[in-house]
Length: 543
Image 1 (cartoon, helix red, strand yellow):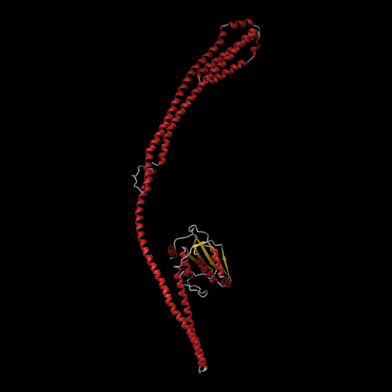
Image 2 (cartoon, rainbow, N blue to C red):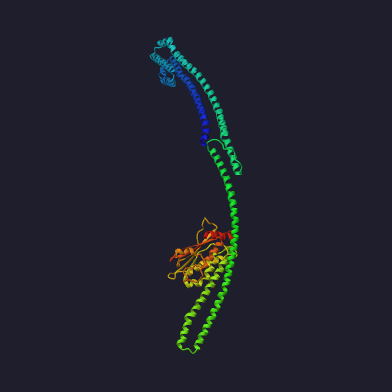
């Protein structure tokens, strides 16, 4: 049974018991009240009977006074008879529920009526001056008994009501006694019901809750749990959940121990791999440096010999001009030198310059990871302002409009951040579409709740745009698009990608060919982890 039902029963059973006791108490109260009402009713009847006797006696006294004074004028008043009739009617209304008393009331009414008739007769005798007859009538025993009959009837009536009053007073006492007994029973029963309910709750629920509480404490402390509590209510369900949770925690501890051992193994392997990677990085840097150094010597020699050949060609031109050859042969030799040798030398010089630029780019790429950054709060507005000022000549030459929104600060190396914006703004200006007015916008996106510690800046242009199939190659070294539009070796975006990654951020591009390009870069607003971890995070993010 669920705790809710148990609670309802614990409340309902004592409630029903108390409700029954309250019913008994109410019934006893009602009986006592009814008995009191009847007792009061009896006293009202006795008082009303006395009210009937008073006007009868007054009328008798008025008759005697009239006879003595020989003045019948007082007997012509009807107020006493009306009062007697009224009092008798009220008396009848009081006893309408008591047939015997109702009959007695009618008998009193008949006696009063008979006395009224006799009084009217005496009044007529008095008016007519028949005093002797009046005196004789007064001495008649029957006439004397009329008042006595009414008084006796009223006395008997009152005697009956007093007997009823005694009975009803006894009933009131008994009702009060029963009411007191019911009140005590209700009080004691309520206390017993509450005690029984508390004992049941303490034994069935309280004890099991104590076990449940102890199990919860043991679970939080990692100790052993007691046996499952019995029952089929919420306490049982919760205890079962605690045991299941205890089992899962044990299993989770075993899994965590296994994962920890596995992680420690992977950490050792990773440390070895990192050491190996560091050695390979150093070897690669040494290889790049060595290769670039070894390649520079032949290139310098090629450049020197090409200059020597250029000077030799000029001497050959002078020698041929001073020779005895005919003009046709001179022209043929001159054309041969200019069209073949001089052109070949020009290609050699171009190749040498191109190779030197590639070697310099390789050295710059290899040195990016070794540069020690001086991270601090960087004013991006000032940095972007310097970049725009440095490129003012190119911007005017391109007739471009560069708009910079207010840019919030970030945290990083100011020089490296200037390289980022310098490269992005430079690319945006260099690859504008000459067929329409060029616009470059530098701004910042709203803060991302998912990355509150980073801020995303963007550089947007309406330039030539980038084909969709080329977007994946934008940050690879030595990959160039629109090579005929601007000079370079194609390492700028690769460089700034590594700079952004070392700051813990990321960089990406969105573009539509013929519409324009937007580069996005996220930079930290607070200090981040070490550069090595940032670089690893960036490499994982960008693949």
